[in-house]
Length: 176
Image 1 (tube, one colour):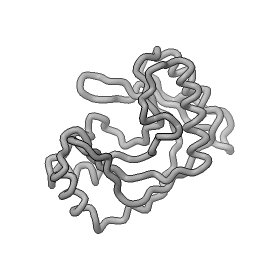
Image 2: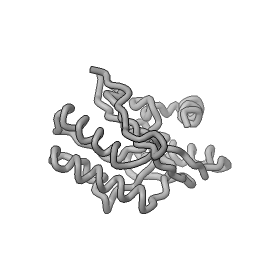
Image 3: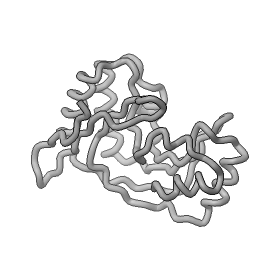
Image 4: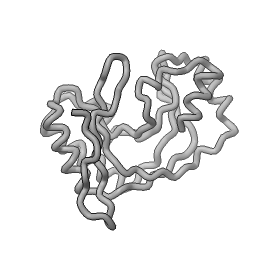
């Protein structure tokens, strides 16, 4: 996916999405919870789910003055259940979960362009990408906690999702 992001930068100067260097699916956002509590909740959640396979299709746009161009992820019962579990776990420790991440409103996606967009640029980008195939299958095998560092959102820590063949989840990275 990074090749598409860099291609959009080359062709249209769109690089706002690179404030988060790693392509990702955002399960939810929380702005007021302590990192210690978030890490505990994510580690526990990782132990309740195995890696997930997700499918994508097409292109989507969140409209506005600075529209967001994205690849939709198809919601499945397993994805819905896991996101709902994460929401409940984080809601217990954070009162500021982004409204777009409420289980009934959440639209899973992979962002291609945001923040430095205009409706005209996004229209051109869609036309440019139109001939490509976005019917992908992707394995999600970890939960990452991203925090803002200067002008980027970087991985603070991540937690492997339990794999039925490997047993217990193991936290394999922690910045601290």
